[in-house]
Length: 347
Image 1 (cartoon, rainbow, N blue to C red):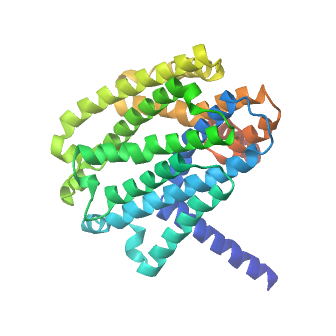
Image 2 (tube, rainbow, N blue to C red):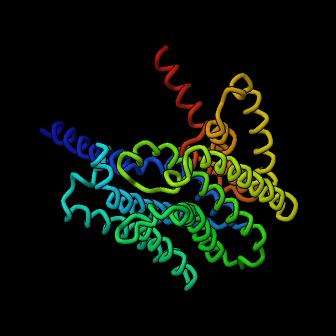
Image 3 (cartoon, one colour):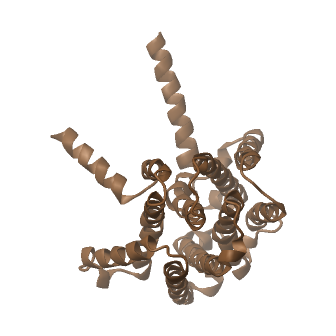
């Protein structure tokens, strides 16, 4: 009887995990956005030479906020897209949920996004950034506004709420947490936000290019459906070049003015390694594949680790945080360990 109860509990846990990670697609931001966003908090800690052990509570609090905000964003998007998704038979879990359960999801995500602020510091600017983030979610996705279908306004809004504002809020919060002024690093963070802005623009164009056929069938008006595929691809290449330029300038500021050297060095070695590893495929790859290989993999898998490794040189308190990051997030180190374990189990 006890064994059956344990199996039932495990089954329920797996059902909930599948619902949130797959049905609501929260595994997407967890794998591809959270590692980048959390790395900006690591960067502020490094700028402050912060060595107190309460970084773990701040780290966990940040994760809850990020999950809550991401949940609000994805749920509001699915809520606004129900009609279009139904017309093209695209899966949308909210079409299967009652209004009561949808409200319950919003309450849950709002709680996750708000309660950690009882621990993390905030001020009027924090409230403005946080409120702007939530406002843009609803303006972008929900009628009667649906900025998503208003051409460039939709693309601009997506970049702001998906990249610029989260980076600004995360960084600013940890400037407050470490009790340092953001004005002392204003050039660095203007570079960071500009880089995130162009990254956000090319990401939403990637997304709209992928959804172009479905959007045409469902009569969803996006920037790409209005501009046309050919012109949108040309613009995307320009945005990628602007993104890369801003990122390189960001790295140069880190290297020359803030003595943060591990990230620029790791970026250089990563690019050399990627050229060597994929040299036979590069000429036959499209610009989207090359962007994922040379930029997104660096941002997601290696940038947080580079900053954490340099943090470990100023205090052993970050060794545990480095291990925790490797366990929680997508990276090649964890991939190699898992591959090694599977190989040994097979043998």
